[in-house]
Amino acid sequence: MRSVRTKLWIWIMALIAIIFVLLWMFQIVFLEKFYLTLELGTVTKNINQIVNEINNLNSLTEIRESTYIMEEMDTLIYEKQLSLVIIDSSFNNVYQASYGSGSNMPGAMKEPVAKAEESALKGTVYREKVIHPKFNYHFMIYGVPVYKGEYISGAMIAIIPLASVEETKQILKTQLLIIVSILFVVSIVTAFILARSFTNPILQISNMAETYAYGNFEKRIENSRNDEIGQLAKRMNEMGEALVRNEVLQKELIANVSHELRTPLSLIRGYAEIIRDVTGDNQEKREKQIGIIIEETQRLSEIVEDILSLSQMQSGTIILECEKFYLSEMLYQMKERFELQQEKRELNIYSLIKEEAAVVGDKKRIQQVFYNLIANAFSHSPETENVEIRISETESRIKIEVIDQGEGIAKEDLGHVFERYYKGKSVNGKKHSGTGLGLAIVKSILEMHQSAYGVESELGKGTIFWFVLNKADSHTSF
Image (cartoon, rainbow, N blue to C red):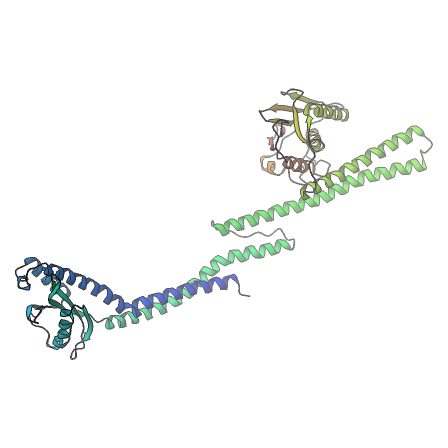
């Protein structure tokens, strides 16, 4: 299989070969034909114009009396170095002139001129290329009839010298052979350099893609180009960085999930063994330990549910069950739930909408969005700070903001907070527990609802997560 470099080199050489062939055809093969066509076209056009002027005279004898016609013929004879003969219908010379020899007609041209005269007096335009028998010069004999009304009153014969193009062709042929030889060598080298210049970056990108396919995401393409290929290499490097980050986050997920699962499993096993061996007859201790087992089981269920939910949403297997529901009712349920969990902190709700304001969406999924965002806010806030929810509305949408008083998020990390496995740092610099899937689940649910969402944060000033929902009377289908 030919490589891209070889194919590109072949195409460049083919293009150069076509250019060389066209040059050869036009400069050598068709040179004489082009010359004759252009030169004779100009001369015959001028002769026909003079004949038209003569046709307007009362008699051919008036030619010498017409200053205009005489000047036109003298100019033509001088510029084109030709000979002109005008005869009447009886073959008598009315006018005769030649360049450089006055009124003398070249002797060797008398026979072909006589043929032209006979043909023209019969009303036929005569055109024939002849060669001087002695000097091998080329001429074109051109004869055209002169009319008086409907009758032929005479004829004009022109002996047009044709400059030989053979010498010119030989000179051009020699020059073209030299030029083609030089350009051929230069073209081979240039085509190779161009092919390598274009294909090397592509081959590097191809090799890098193969490297990534084998799981090595650390390598990068050295790129200094600013064209489309440079942009492609830049995107490949960015993909490598994303793959490295994703690999790191996946490893963290495995470690986090392992830790999160191991802790409740250890507690469940430990308390189950204690109940079996020690406290089985002590009802108070047994109930307390069974309660812990139930709580840890619930925690395990939530971890597995997060992983399963994100997987289903990203695979597109979940179908939204949209309905109309009241936002205020859901928010106050959330407030009670979290304030029971957070003994010293509150979830403050500041609403600028009416209590009967309804939205449309999958109630269960939107509830999960609220839960994840509020849990995230409490997780990233100091133990003495409350969490706020602010609600505002426009004509067709309701905007919800979840605000915490934590340390905030660095600007360079804002673009990653909704990624899978991303986990921020707590106020004491340690990573939070959990799988890092909560905000990724929020993103997936809101995108399924075609809802806008975002995050605003500055270090030391807390964080605002926001999203919008459609009002029940203006929603679009999902």
